[in-house]
Length: 208
Image (cartoon, rainbow, N blue to C red):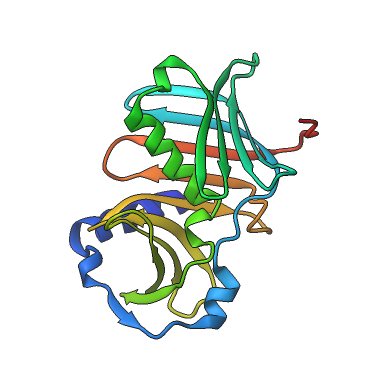
């Protein structure tokens, strides 16, 4: 039900209330300090990726490395590495990817997804604030006209989602769990084409 309501609200936003309807307001620094995304701690997730009728499933590792880089590695249950990405000091490197994923548009899409999940757009950038209906949007500019937002209710009592868009939402991230840096579930939903990434936290010892 939660994700149905979320999908419905996004559909309404993208169709009836694009970003041009956002109204600028003063930044509530207390709200920014409370909900500004801080990324994901080292964690294992069971992962399912659905894109244009195709499904991949396996294990996804998000790991903070000693050199302050971050790795996102997606493998099958049998150990085949679907992709291995490195994010380090503003750079991005594809360490490994299966041929089916080695297309520029696919890599760029996955890069934006995990870059946003790791909260990279929100690091060391000035946040601005806008409102639309009963939601508050705290945003930064990413590339060109694209913006990354974290969205709260108007009372700043709950973080509703993180999303990236230009004139309207391109994709959104919803997570649940007691700790923002160690969410139990994560859903990345694209709104301009059929792609969904679902992650569920699992307990697994990290050795590498």
